[in-house]
Image (cartoon, rainbow over all chains, first blue to last red; front, side, top):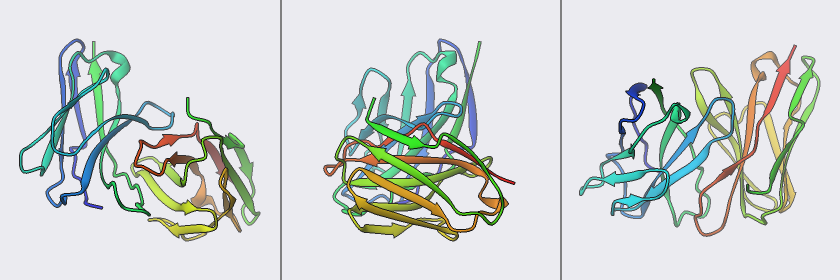
Length: 112
Length: 112
């Protein structure tokens, strides 16, 4: 599975959009981008995934560049409860024994 | 919530003793994973399973073994616990057709 690179941390103001970047320059054609988040001490939680089209669900939007080498997770109206570590991972969806590895993620701090 | 349970949730053990952590699922998912999480390291994959009796190593497998004799249970064993294995351990499951992964609540293990 391709590697991802994320900044270590970022912050944003409550009520504003939080844009979390992820670089995955070695992504291959059959690999999906997945985002998870981990709120303090809890198990990680799935947020959203995509292949090449932009995706939106009730939690967030995922914008993938046309060359698929990077993506941005957008939390449109961040709240204090969105303070968490966010992980961007790339998975070969057809891979029978995909390892599902996570990096260190990006720590998002939402300030009042 | 996905049917995934880790036991025990907390354990304190002495150096040199064997320890087994259990991950139990009721979803009949094919894939199961064990991770450890330490400050500054994010989530690191220990071992994973892609079917009954089919397991493979992750990033930090030294000192750990696993077994999966039936679909619903994935056991992580520390043959001789060391203080460096003090950590929070998470189990995850995911289905055959790449659905998102679901994580357990975690097991806090302290080796004294």
